[in-house]
Image 1 (cartoon, rainbow, N blue to C red):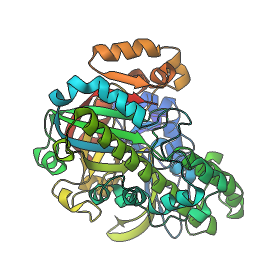
Image 2 (image 1 turned 45 degrees about the vertical axis):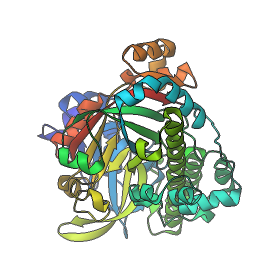
Image 3 (image 1 turned 90 degrees about the horizontal axis):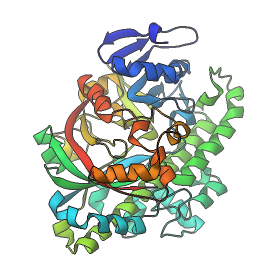
Length: 479
C-alpha cells in the first residue's frame, strides 16, 4: 500500500482513486508513521470508506490512525445529507468517548504534597474498572431524562454549573436525541454507570501545564505555566456500546433493502434520510448525551475531592471547565463545498472537532483563540491543548486528531510489559498511578501507543491545528 501513496508534502499522502472508490483518500502523517499505518491495514480502511455512497470530499485519516471496526480509528468522513449514508462503524462502539480538561487556580507545589492522598480520594469517589457501577442508581425513566438532556440533566441535579455547559461541545446536549429509539437492554445498562470512568484507555489525570506556546489562546482558556489541571477521559459506557451493537444488527438487513454495495461488511450503513438512518442518529445522539452527563458528574466529584482533600474553598480551587470535546460522534453540519454551504453528515471516529475562531459554535470567550482541541497522550506521557484553524475548516471538515493512537494490541503488549513494574517505573518519573488491576496498566503502557509529540506535530505542521499548551501527568487513575 505504501508504494501506492502519492506524496503531497511532508505531512499529506494521497491514496489515488481506484476500483470502487468514489473519491481519493488523504492521510495526514509523517513518512516515519506510514509503515504502521499501512501495515495494520488502516490505510486500506481509508480506501474502503471512500467507496461509500454520497461521500463528500476525500476519505480522511488523522495522524493517530490505526485499524478499527469498519472505519479506521482516526478516520473522518463527511456524506451529503440528502444522498449520503450514516454508519455506526464511522462513529464507533464507545459513542462520545471524549475528554474534558479542568483548570485550577493551583500550582504544582500546591498539589504535590497531597498528591497521593488526592489520587486515593479520587479513586474512591470516581468508580473505575470493567463493569464499574457508580454512586447513582437511576430508574429507567431517569435514564431517559439523562438521554434527553445530557450534561444539562447533571447540572439540574446539582452536579455542576451553567458555566460548565457553555464550555462543553453542543453545550452537553444533542437535541436530536430520542430515547424511544434505544433498546430496553441499553437503558438497563445505563442505570448504574452515570459518573463512572470505565476501563481500557479511560483515565482521570492530575496534570501540570509544562509549556505554553500561544499566550493569547492560553490566556483565553485560563491556562498558565506551572498550573495544576485535571483531564477526564471516558464515554457512554455499556449503554453506548449496546446502542452501537443493536443498530449494527438492524442495519445489516437494511443494507440489502437499500441496495448498498460494501467493500467490507463492517461498513454497514443506510441513507441518512432513511427511517433506519434517522432512528440510529437519534439513538446515537442519546448515547452521546449520556456520555456528557457521565463526564459532568465525574467532574463534580473531582471538584469535591480537591476542595475536601486540600481544605480550600471553591474560589481558591478555581476548578473550571476549559472544554469538553467528543471524539467518537456523528454530526449534522454545514460546510463549504466549491463555495456553497452544504449540509453534511460528518463522521469523526477517534477524531475531534477543531473549529476555527470564526465559527459560531466556538464559545464567545474563546473567539480570539479558536475552539480548544484536547489531545491526551498515552499513560505517563504529555498531553496537549491545541486550537482549531481555518485550514482545518477547509480541509478536514474542522477536524483534528484525538490522541496518540495505538501501535500494539493489548494482547501483544501484555507479552512485553509487567503492570507492577510499569507502576514503579512511572513513580520514579514522578507519576503516581493507581488502577483496578496491573493488567490494565500493562495494556495501556506508553509503548503501546505512537509518540503523541509526533502526532501533534503533524497536525500543527500541516496547519489543521495550533499548539496552545503542553501538560505532563503527575497523578493517574486507570480503570
